[in-house]
Image (tube, rainbow, N blue to C red; front, side):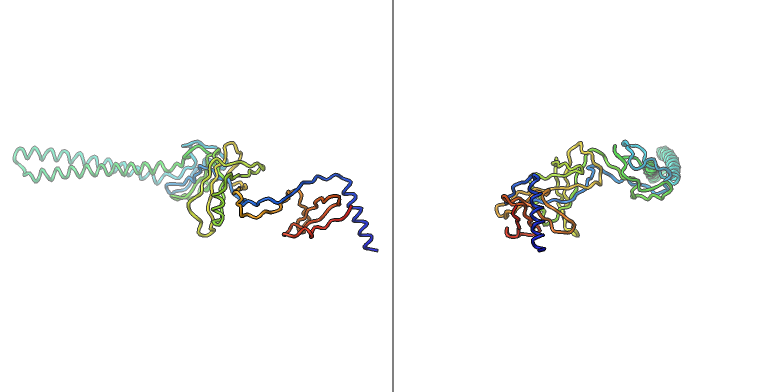
Length: 319
């Protein structure tokens, strides 16, 4: 009795399904391509971590994340008292070297006059000339040290190397900046690229791709204007970095996620597979995906596509 009731309810359900028109699509076996998709990230073609070149406390942070800056614009200022004192010391050293050079010139001239009068020997004149050359070299050295001190004084102002956008600030006012340590990260907007790590086992397939595409966050697929494969493999992750330059006009920002597809062509040896549209797959919780294809005048057939199975596994109920 329970079996008859179950058949009746099944027949009524199928009849109701047949009453409403349902869109169908014909599927068939096609050669499976060797393409694959990977996750990537957006990166600016021109980016930089602007670092301090002298050590000292940060006395001023002139920008914040998101600010647009121009080349040469002040980003941060470091305490310049130490470098200023060094510059003053170099100025004094230059003045001292100039005085010693002037004294050496006068002494050399005096010794030449005395030599002409026969009051001193030639060795005295040679010694005076040697002292003059040493004084000139000392002045050149002092001037070089002053130039270096002035350059260090200029390093107290951290400036933007190019026109761009501040991505992040790595220090705050009052922090101790060290030479070579980043202060601000920035990038030039407009020129962007997708960076994807391709497994080394799929590197050959990626090279064989004829039309790789990048899926933007809005769902559009675009073709890169240029692709570059780095000539080294990561020894730990065993991946190869690919850089795909994106066309201009894409409203993206560095760090966004996107999808990269390498559509390698199918080979003759690739077996054929049966594929169905993703919209035709029914998913309910943790159950296996299934489809309900139409078969002649039958109502509907439930087929389990979770793993390869013969056609006998698809059960049909007569209308």
